[in-house]
Image 1 (cartoon, one colour):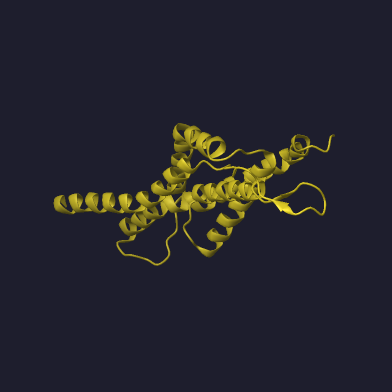
Image 2: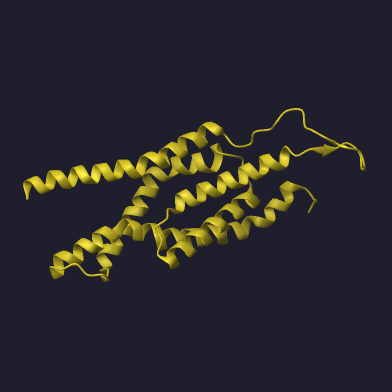
Length: 194
């Protein structure tokens, strides 16, 4: 094997698969719980007639969450995967491994602490972290010869697509209030009827 980045990256194929599997586990541990938590609460209240601080989650409720996550991934996942995996910054096996491992560990720790985080947002944050580090390393001053003074690079290299960054940041800011307003409107309409 040559001591070149392309050949070294192939060593990360198996670790990348393992870290992606760990991220999938973290996704199921946190995001499915975020999605089915309200349904589990409703099922508990309807079944017992009272609000409890802890509820047991029926298997059929977890199955609905699993099927929903799977359908969403099949229908809309490829577009998101294309944006995150190709359009934000250039990824190889090494970079993808770092992103998947960092996102998985972050989401698992959040799950242990009971924090409802998004594994998608966490992974996107990892992509930006890798991209901005690449920019920083690509734009640091260079030495022409050993012992010579540092020279600045001619033109700053941008390795993260800023337009995608702005779009994703806007989506993060807009989605939470939008979902809150929509849920409030649906509740208002239903409370008028019942």
